[in-house]
Length: 168
Image (cartoon, rainbow, N blue to C red; front, side, top):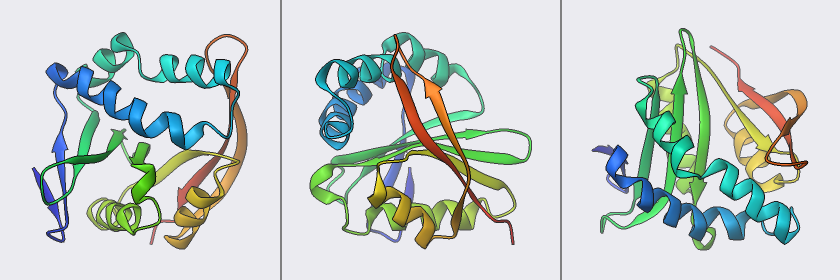
């Protein structure tokens, strides 16, 4: 368990908690992205990202770590996934419950990550239409280094920016 300023806790997710991740993602990811996609696209992309087999594969990788973001009452309010490589860190997922977005939780998590892994190249993908997340990342020193589309399930695609934190 990792404590962040006594306000948040990161609890690493184990393979036996996949059902909880899927349930939490359904509660957070679906409403967060409902305005970006039609219903068919939304559910196809969700099922592509949050299917049991993919989650199991990721959790088996020694360089991939999933965390529940919990409040002081130990209630899950979001989730985070980090993927490490030789000299870089990809923030693969960082999602906070829609009711808590804009409350500073994302900033607390980013400050923690940026301090702890400051020696690494830190990068992420973010939906181009997600202006709130883009602004959050820019506030913390990330810059857009590419604009790229990624194919999702079926004919659907993710229209993302690749953002990177400049190393100091």
